[in-house]
Structure formats: structure tokens, C-alpha cells
Amino acid sequence: MLSISVPPSLWDEIGEVAEKEKMTRSELLRVAVRDYIRSQRWAELREKGARTAAKYGVKSESDVDRILEVLVPAGERSRTVNDALAKELLSIRRRKLTERLRTLRKKGPAVPTEDIVAALRKDRENR
Image 1 (tube, rainbow, N blue to C red):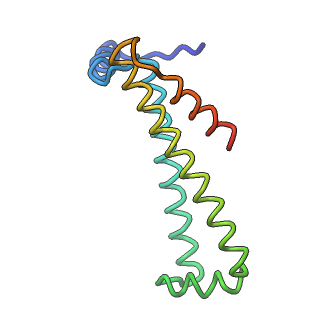
Image 2 (image 1 turned 120 degrees about the horizontal axis):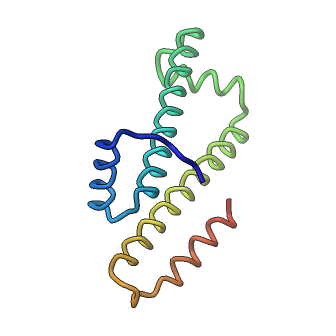
């Protein structure tokens, strides 16, 4: 458990958004923090990329291809990119399945969710 302090007006606003999204405040805050951290990582990555590009005079995609060819053999590069892509696709699939499960739960307890839960477990095992 974690305690945080927020002004009452912000707490009320969090409650309104959570209710609108049919989430608990905790779920909403987890999603918000996760998205914030992800956006910060992307911002840092873009900044690092810009600095690296400036340092090495990279101005186009053909410059990137030329540098990659020298640094990483084509077969290795392909495997690395494919691994990263597969990991991101699994992450996207997990998010979509979680959203679908949440939607089904909103419809009522009679909706079967076993298949979705099984798919989420399978994705977790594939990480």
C-alpha cells in the first residue's frame, strides 16, 4: 500500500474521470503513472537520439543505414529488431486483452471471461 497527498479538488477530479472511464481511482492512477513514465522514456530516447545524430552528423535514414551496416551485421540487426518488435506486439496485445476484459466485466457477471484470462496468462508466460 502507498499513500500520496493530493489537493481535494484534484482528488474530486480523479474521481470524476475514474467514474467516467468506469475505473477505480487506483486503476486510473496506475494507468496515468504508467503512461507518464512511458512518455518520459520516449522523450529521453528522442533527446538522446537527437544528440547522437548531431554528434555523428546523421541527417537522413540512409546515414542511419550506413552506420548500422558498419556497426551491426545485417543478420544480427534483423534478429534484434524482430525481438524488440515481438516484445512490443505482445505488450500491445496484453493491453488490448486487459481492456477487453474490463469492458466485459462492465457488461455484467454473466459474461464469460475465461478465454480472455487464459490469453492474458499465455501472453505473460511468453514474456
